[in-house]
Image 1 (tube, rainbow, N blue to C red):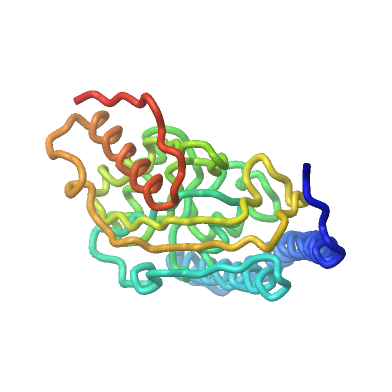
Image 2: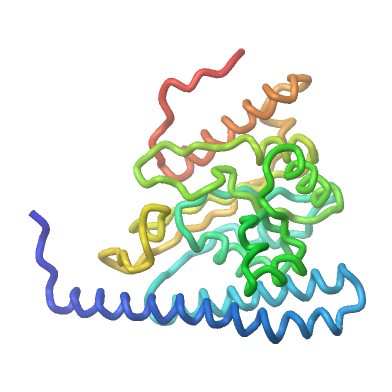
Length: 275
């Protein structure tokens, strides 16, 4: 039987429900305002594509910081960030692939709020959104095309010496279920030969998963523990001279095992890999 909430708990939950509605409404209104005012102005006063890209990303970085600050100061969320110096270290030659597990809707918002300059893979549907199309285009974000085009675009960004944020799961994690990594992130890492910087994310209690709407308020304020782990390269964790398909599969499995161990997710069962 579910325990009854005290009047203080009910009041707190009621407050967080309305504060969440206010926060997400503010996010949507802010996107519309920036999309029709600030970003067109940036386009007019930026004399080169790299300059426009830097300014657009810095705008999104500060907008996300403001949104995270709003949620934090209204008591909706809290977070702790460990290893910030690794996340903000200069990008090495050959680029940096930042990979993270994806327990919640706002993981990308949190990470971009820490990173003033980073490339992202975003849903191709945003290119059809009249409010968000130009911000993501001018920021130089990469649409999540399928197959070789996506891998080639990501590898190009990394070889240019930039940082790229990727969620290897491709979508949000399922609470209580084993992590499932797609091979795209591994294929990108292998194609670029870049540094890989893993970021493990734990969100307790679970909230804003793929199965939850914004109004499904958790019993208490959600807390994110974000840990930037030491970096590595693919050549350090899988054998050399493997066929490309097998190398991608082995590296993807390494990502899965790595994050499973870091966040305490259930281990996948009966997953067979070729020798």
